[in-house]
Amino acid sequence: MVKKLKKSSLNRRDSAIRLVLMVAIILLVNVVSRLYYLRFDLTAEKRYSISSPTKNMVKNLKDVVTVKVYLGGDLNAGFTRLKESTKNLLAEFRAYGGKNIEYEFIDPMAIENLDERKAVMSDLMQRGLAPTNLTTKSKTESKQQLVFPVALVTYAGREMPVQLLENQMGYSPQEILNNSVISLEYKFANAIKKLIQYRAPRVAFIKGNGELSSVELADIEATLKGLQYQVSEVVLQNSYHISSEIDAIVIAKPRLAFDEKDKFKIDQYIMHGGKVLWLVDGTNAEMDSLKVNRGIQSINSNDLNLDDMLFKYGVRVNNDVVQDINLNNPIPLVVGQMGNAPQTQMFPWYYFPLLVSENSHPIGKNLDPVAAFFASTIDTVGNDGVRKTILLRTTDNAKAQLAPTRIHFGILQSKPNPAYYNQPKLPVAVLLEGEFESVYKNRLSPEFLAASDTIENLKFVDKSKPSKMIVIGDGDIIRSEVRNDSSAYPLGYYMYTKQTFANKDFILNCIEYLIDDSGILETRNKEVKLRLLNSVKVEDEKLKWQLINIALPISIIILLGVVFGFYRRKKYAS
Image (cartoon, rainbow, N blue to C red; front, side, top):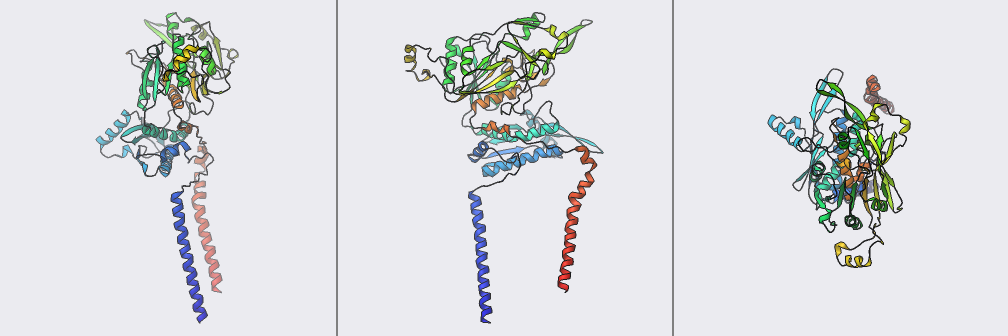
């Protein structure tokens, strides 16, 4: 009896010890999990993971970021995926940002008060957040509804709109939604970055050498300001130097040659760490000249006196004009008269190529074609310390026409022979990254160097720190078309076809890549493979797979229960 009591006491003690150890382990695991955050993403593309720059940004937030997502309602499968992907991304943001990330999903169409609903919808559209007319089809009916795939990000009293749905030409609806899912992290991270930055990045447009007018640059300047950039103009002839406080300068389609003093200012701005977006034409080809001269223009080299600078930095803008018979914009030409009214017809104009990006660089990834006008090719040359990346190029059916030459509408009278357009993938935009050497190295007198060394802002530097610049062989890529009332069309809008190309997105990506060192733009490299189901097969085999996925598991569980019950009865009956 004593032995039994002692054994029972030992068992109780062992049970108590095991219980205490189990509780201690659970508490320890909870404490460690609070101190060390760990998540596993087992997908091939790491689709549920955010990049290191984004993690660092949301971890270091000083105030609360509030996100209101207006995507709601009875959505189809594609938009439901976009909504769930947005929710998963924001949950991931909260996992790293903690209480500094708040978000909610709102369905504007579910607001019962009609006036309030209209006010919300009007407010969203005034912010440039466009709705989408969604058509949902079934076997028996087709239903249309208005959805807002948009969001508003708020931080410290400031707001930034985010358009969740990509607007891309030539892609299927599934591809557009897939690209929209891919872009979510970049869009939200970029919006937060713009809101939390301690000072707005500064961009200056260079003036004084016949650059594009304020009206032609109005849309891109307004867009930059809306994205929290400080935008200004710098007239080179009125400045003794370009301030190093300017993060990037834009040289947009100069028509007059630069003198050495102004070139020196640009060169030293680069040597002191400045970034440059060059948009320069290799020839003087212009559509207005063609119209004035009855469809014929003799084009010549565009002598801007920049060749030595660009060559030193690693590129050469050629004195030629690109033709592409595969991908281009059309122009209207008069083909006859009907009474007093001229009859026009649209013809493909090979000198207006649509440029594409064929690499995974974040500047051009997933972008629509970029519309160009009398573009020139770019060669990369020498300078082994500078990395060159082609950002835009023509298609396979292109050629470069060297100046001096003549262009005329007569080439449209016959079908082009592809054999003559045998220069594939001609580069038109190039990114340069590395350490640039001054074009004025070993060219300045000792007296000038001694004098410049006494003034901090003018101290001569013959080699830059690691820096970046982008050279584009077409100044019109950044130019907005101008209406008859002297107002500007949106950048990238082509008035003859009423299509909008990716010019604005491309220019914005260029400027952001030049200025931003946080690596947020790199999130545009994210890939999510599109695994589409065979819709016809799905419809035909719908019942079969419903039975396999719903009825079969239940049947297996019931069968196991019956077998287990039979086994127990047989075992214990004996």
